Structures are given as C-alpha cells and as structure tokens.
Amino acid sequence: MTDLSLLSSLRREAREAPASGIVDVVNHGRTRPGLIPLWVGEGDMSTPAFIAEAATRSLVAGETFYTWQRGIPELREALARYISRLYGKTYEAERFYVTGSGMQALQIAVRMLVGSGDEVVVPTPAWPNFGAAIGIAGATPVPVPMQLSNAGWTLDLDRLAGAITPATRVICVNSPANPTGWTASREELAAILALARRHGLWIIADEIYGRFVYDGSERAPSFRDVMDAEDRIVFVQTFSKNWAMTGWRVGWLEAPPALGDVIENLIQYATSGVAVFIQRACIAALDQGEGFIAHQIARARAGRDIVCRGLSATGRVRFAEPTGAFYLFFSVDGEDDTRRLAIRLVDEANVGLAPGTAFGAGGERFLRLCFARKAEDLEEAVARLARALT
Image 1: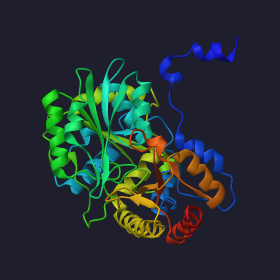
Image 2: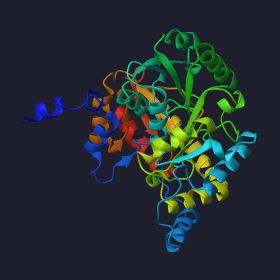
Image 3: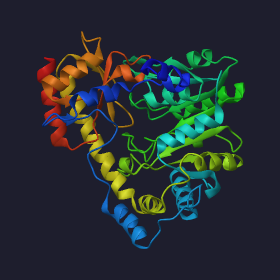
Image 4: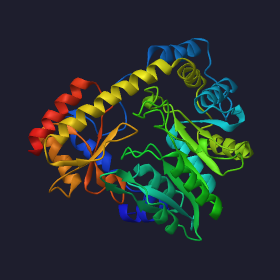
C-alpha cells in the first residue's frame, strides 16, 4: 500500500488538519546557538518553587493513583475561590472541571457544541488552534477579520452579526487576544452576548490572558460581568500563563453544572483525569500565587515598553500598542510574505518570531513577538531586529 493510499484512508478532518505556521519557523531555527526565541506563547520564567514543592509533597505521599474525572474536590473548590474573588461574585465548585491543558478544555468545549455541518464564528487574527479544533470536529470556522487603525484593533460588531447563518452554533471570543492584544470592553462583551442570545448561540470564551492588562486594573472585562446564570457560555482556561506552568499541561473548563456529566465523560474517554500531584500544584498556584502573577505582569509591561519603543524607532514598523496579553503584533513596511520574513529574521538577526500567516484572515502581513521575557533579552532582540530591518 502506498503512502498516498494510506493517507487517503484517513478521515478527512484528520488528514486536513492544518500544519502550524509557527512550528514551521520554530523547526527552522530551534537549534541556532544564541537565538532569542520570541515565537511561542510562554515566558522565560520557570514554575515557582512553591508550586513545584506542592507537587513533590504529593508524590512523596503516594498520590499516584486514578482520581476524580472532574478534578479533585480541593482543586475545584480552589478554582471557585479564585474566580469568586477575582470577579466579585460567588461561584460554586460544581462549575469547574479540570482538564489536561487549556487545549483539552477547548477541544472538549468544541466537541460538546459542534460537529459536521456546523459553523463557528471566530474574530481573527486568532490563535490557530481555534480553527484547527473546530475543523477536526468536522465543523467550519468562519473568520471575521478585525481592523487595525489609529484607534488600535477593533471588532466590527455589524460584521460579526453578518457572519451568522442558520448553520452557526457558536461564537468564539478571545479577550485579551492572542496575537493582537485587543481587549474587549464591557460594552463590546455585552453586545456580543446580546447577539448570541438573539440567535440562540453558545459562546466559547477564552479569557486566558485576563490578568495581563496594562491599565492598572486587576483583570480585563469579562463575560462574567454581563452574563446571567442561564446564558450559554463555556470558559476555557489554563494554568500555563499566570503561573508559568506551560509544561505541566493542565487547565480547566467553567461551564453550567447541567453539562457536568457530559464533560466528565469526555474527560474520561480522553485522558481519564489529571494526575493528583499536578492538581496539588495547581491548588498552591491559586492560593499562593498572587505575588508571582503581579511580578509577571510588571515584567510584561516593561517588556511591552521595550519592544514598542525599539521597533517604533526603526521607522518601518506599524502596530497598535497592546492593551492586554503579552504579544506585539506588527507589520513591516514593504514586507508582505511574513513567513519568508520570519525565516530571514532567524537567519539574519537570530531572533525567532511567529509569522502572521499562522493566525488567519487579517494577520497575513504581521509578525507576532512574545515580550514576556527579561529586559536584557528583549533589548538585545530589538537591537538585532532593528539592524536587520533597516
């Protein structure tokens, strides 16, 4: 049997799952000595010791057996405490379900809500995993490109409404947004929710970067600020960003308790739950991690200032200063093929950036830079990029 016939025997959804445009550039440059990697969505800080030590204590105590599919009760209660404090409302532990990463949380949300023939409206540029997860489920992502102007990135709500068809089941909203840094206002979230209510749609809300805002607020506006208990909203979350736990692969879903049995089954048939020692580490993160989060945000704010100031000085770069998340999404005058440009910047500047082509409609002429790193690395990266671009 030939390779072609083997591939053709696979399901179309699996066969046509898109390759990551980010990984393409990473593979080109990952072994370069001295390369400054600003291409993926993680900082340069290791997980804090108080989190790792909680996992170690659990391992020493012998907590290495199968466990609750929805998450251990202690972690679900910690999640309820954390969200209740952050959003000023009381949330019960029954709303929270522990998953093996934020990506699994997204996969479960998508699998619950859509399938073959369904459509999901997604403002773009967007994290490429949204469209991929939707496509693998057999549904179709419908992009709604945002616009960049002197006012920053904006979402045209009329255009969003115009993308809804009889096949639409879900609106997927990421705010603060990867890669643009767009942060929806409370009024915009209320308008999106009203649109979803009017058409009987679900919302998948990715508010993973909700703590990374730069206006002095403790957190970004949230659908929790405008929703009612009966609204059809599923929140996907991760421990990766706030607590520097990208390698731990743990996240959570927040959803109406009526969905609990369905979510539990989907976790059971995918991973059979998250390791208890990892969950103990997550409890420590939630209960003891506010100081670390504040430190990370302060570093990211300083990093944002460094890259915005340095790249603006080249005279060739256009961007909107991000109000949230920890990415700068910028274009370079005269450069339309950003995959080729990203490869060239690896070769000439020894700096790794993600090409905007990876982020869908509206992102093609841009590059994404992650500024959640120490100042010295960012100063050097900007100096190298400036030399290569000018």
